[in-house]
Image 1: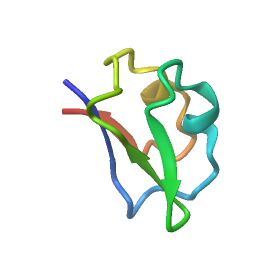
Image 2 (image 1 turned 90 degrees about the vertical axis):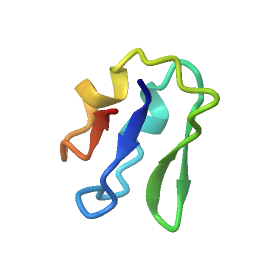
Image 3 (image 1 turned 180 degrees about the vertical axis):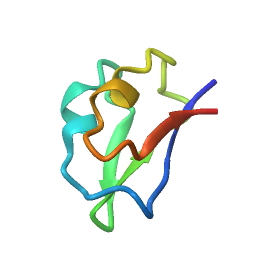
Length: 57
């Protein structure tokens, strides 16, 4: 499984970027973007996202 961002819900707050232990999340056009190759499936971003824009797929 990998973290997936719903760009409609993403507010660009960068919380996920700050909490990702694998540095798998970057910002692109003010929205979070997950690098699936770096994601370690820890779900930290899912738990910390204030807009509930990230899920595991």
